[in-house]
Amino acid sequence: MDTAIVGLQWGDEGKGKVVDYFLSHANHSHCIRFNGGNNAGHTVEKDGKTYKLSLIPTGILTPNILNVISRGVVVDPVHFLHEIKILKDAGIAVSPSNLIIDAGCALITPDHRRVDSEKNSAIGTTGRGIGPAYEDFYARRSLRVGDLALPDHVLEEKFKNFFTNYSQWLMDFRSTILPYVIFDSAKYYQDIDGKVLFEGAQGMMLDVFHGSYPYVTSSSTNPAFASVITGRHNITNIVGVTKAYSTRVGNGPFPTELHTGPEAEVLSTIGREVGTVTGRKRRVGWLDLAQVKRSCEISGCRSIVVTKLDVLDSLGEISVGIGPLANEWVQTDNHMQYKTFAGWQVNTRDVTSWEQLPNQAKQYLEFIEDFLNISVKFISTGPDSSSMISV
Ligand code: IMP
Ligand code: MG
Image (cartoon, rainbow, N blue to C red; front, side):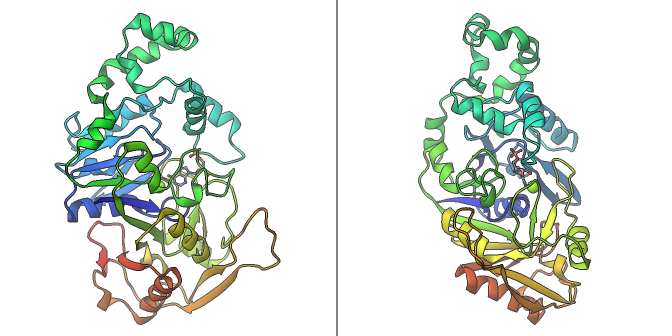
């Protein structure tokens, strides 16, 4: 049985920490990314150090895990090598013995980055070239990682126009990347004996099919997509991650958003809600349970991790949105309904057992569980990997 960690909101739910926790506590052999690219920003605090990963799977921080960038991911080759260097500088071992790229990954080129920055500002993309790279992939004209192994004249023939402008760009990384590449990835995925942990990037509300289109990313964030990409069809432990409140970076609908006021200030500053990739201030708001419930349904999630509970500690009152769900085609007069809870106003930072939680926090979590009809299995109470309650 494989596991998938999936974001239930708009990304930044704390999946990086959850992936790291699962890899440290359960027996997995592989950590595989199946969507997105270096638009993701996974922050992991471990042994007193902070690591920020965008493209390389979080499992790189755990010894004896084989990390795979599968062909659902678009790869910026220059960024790939840059991230390896940052990890190595931080003392993390990275080599083809613990990191692999699927030959089928489409490459992000400098043109993709330029087009993304110039044309996609209305959506508020990360500007990393993700959308334009997927556009070329689905238009069947991408240069893929495996093409780097072709002899020069074949590569030149196959990508004539591109080669004229970018032969130097290609040569700069070609020989460094090739040792990381697996060419028969379908067989590779089938042959994995151990348990795989699939690391989701972004969140269900940014899914290109089911998110708030067009304010979405360009890949599917659904763990079912991991099966499409790898041919592994036993991903039954689907773990959904939600913050105890909501954030969103970029544009698009956010029904429970708090634009100003002391509560917004608490979520923003105590929660340190600044984008890992872009440095943009994240929009903040109450938890939207109607939205999270929909995300659970379409992702097939079987258990929940609630993160950043401690960020709510100082609030006198805490609200959650309970519906109705916004739908761009079906207009309703109903505004978002809220259920409001008394805050606990006690420190829950770094608490590691359910018993130590104040009653109001327990009630808040039990309401989430009842509303979603899914068990809350873990609660994160601080950035450090040890600040986790296993229920
Ligand atoms: P793109 O993925 O760069 O094309 O951006 C599309 C939308 O997804 C924008 O609103 C981005 O801010 C958002 N986005 C992309 N990746 C992440 C992420 O990892 N966390 C949060 N938002 C993201
Ligand atoms: Mg992030």
